[in-house]
Image (tube, rainbow, N blue to C red; front, side):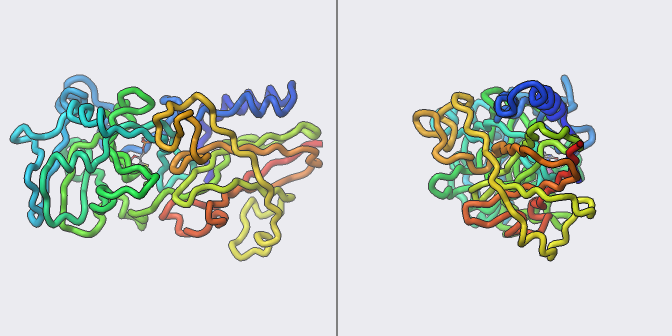
Length: 393
Ligand SMILES: Nc1nc2c(c(=O)[nH]1)N[C@H]1C(S)=C(S)[C@@H](COP(=O)(O)O)O[C@H]1N2
Ligand SMILES: [Mo]
């Protein structure tokens, strides 16, 4: 299914269209590169709850403990776990916003991360998330024993049926591989307090995971002896441990007709998942009359001619240099950065009039091309998209 076109897409297209018609196509391509950090109004939202927690106002917001001053985080244990110093509301030990800021002075992390839903192709938006590693909060709780997993959830209108739950193995919280980022409890987005609609005042951020692990309006963590995921997203055959996938997406499906003789610029987004991204490539062929569908075993796949696309370069100066993955000069150590997205573009020239099918795919750092190696779409959507268009005489 095609994604709905956002206002940003619409604007981008009309600009690109105008410029391409009047100016040199190469200039047009540069001038309309989208911003790496999604403007707040363009973030797509995936929230459950009635009423939606981010629609609460005034006193309701205070009662829900969703203001910076009233926000509290409980860290408790189930009956099989011992925990020396649990953090609880009823004895006033629950952590407050200032406790996070205080820890952030010595342990703060900043990370460019795209939010992407397990079940929606195109990423929802990306920004610089800032917070403290969850393990530093656990340290405040003293000694624990028998913990195998963490369950956590956020505000849910005090209605157990509305809990949006997620979970992590304890080792995923305590250990971090070299050059990776830990799970963290975030309190800023792009240098500002996290807006309520993005899960503020405080949101869990799991760098490598699809959106459902990054619980919004975070309020409670339970250390458990259970070894199983209890994620809300384990329902409906979703894979509750799905890492972000590497995949390419078209930004715009709306344009179906191009004039002959003008270079055609096509743009999109490439998600850099767990296996990294080596390149994005495209395949253009005459429309085969199958409405853009090619069966998995169709020999057309193996004879396809894939051509590299251009990856939009790192926008120098747009990202603070203390963000994970940048060097002292503010340049990325690898580009694009893992668990964020970048933009790709391609320019088609001298395309003869006719009907076409255009596909894009990623090739990851292991040399594996999309949609492999994880064909189960409930483990992160990864189908090769097709854009159909005609070039007019
Ligand atoms: N508390 C809570 N957290 C939540 C959700 C929710 O419904 N409630 N939705 C999750 C899902 S399924 C996704 S994809 C992301 C979406 O993040 P966004 O709304 O900031 O784009 O938030 C996750 N965190
Ligand atoms: Mo989601």
